[in-house]
Length: 224
Image (cartoon, rainbow, N blue to C red; front, top):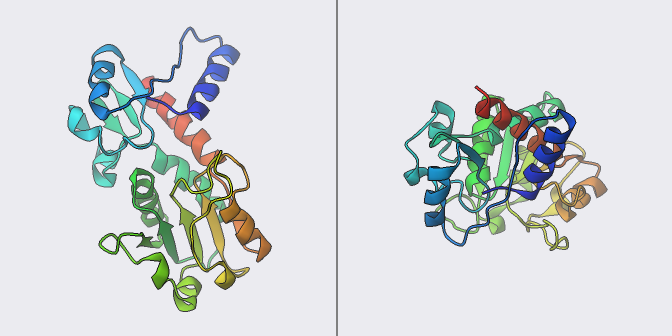
């Protein structure tokens, strides 16, 4: 399993550093197909929608992946999470002293790594979901809640290429210059979510650096 970004990143890395290796994509119709990969590959990346579903197939998890509850890297049938490393390293330079609380849009595998990363950085996360059992709903986002949460992280696929006209349905009219909007999406670089924030003067950051750092961390795991 893999992501097109990772394939491009590692192909260029192998060529640049004269490494005799190959990084391929393995599209799956069902997580059960990952059993064959576990038997034939020493290591691979895991992307949506399998970051949680693959866990029962693994022999174990490292401490961070176990705490997060999601896996994006596998090595010798053991699961790891480097999304959190990419997120922490990307978000940290963008934060200011006023950032104390964050809204996390979405409740999938990426959001679990983001919640972990926010807590590591000393921020209190609040989950936002279409499912009221998983967090506050988008309809419940008031001006007061938006004001209290100066960091807003999009962990949904809304706005990702090719459906670039989509975005999370939050009340953008309440976003101010005090806010930071972080989008885990990297393609396009300026999503509709980020564009709306930019129009209000908010700080914005896309997922490109997060992807690079998680890939670098994955390479370190595979070369222990």
